[in-house]
Image 1 (cartoon, one colour):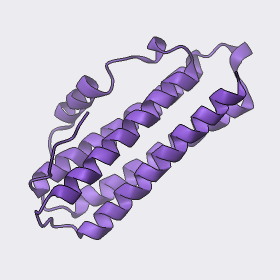
Image 2 (image 1 turned 45 degrees about the horizontal axis):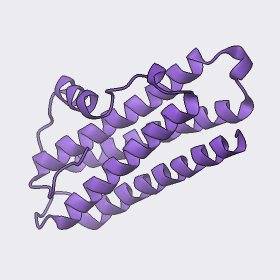
Image 3 (image 1 turned 90 degrees about the vertical axis):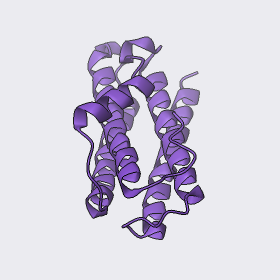
Image 4 (image 1 turned 180 degrees about the vertical axis):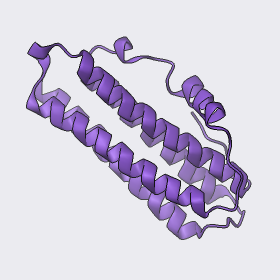
Length: 163
């Protein structure tokens, strides 16, 4: 999902950050669901560790983003509306649509990376002054994007070890 060419207001930024929170929830829920569905014979310490890491990272990202939202002088959008937007863009597939837990997690990490990359670009292109300090906002989002890139690499490495 491309967020938008520029972020136009605090309300717009809050909406995009709310989408990020729900996106992180989707990634975490998918990690749990994939592992729960994994046959006992296919479970191992590396996959379990990866999924635990994904869940912990998503929770941390949500907390950081929620902190940013609280600092904005903006009205929030109803959770149901945000959840529907995320569903339209990111949850078109289910955990069962992928050939294995690692492919599903790779999809989630890549989707999150792309979302944060687009959001950062949209903020950088905006000339709007937000009620939150721009450099700190971008630093938090860049940190999260870096985590997502590292997650993609970790999953790809694990996949490579299994082939």
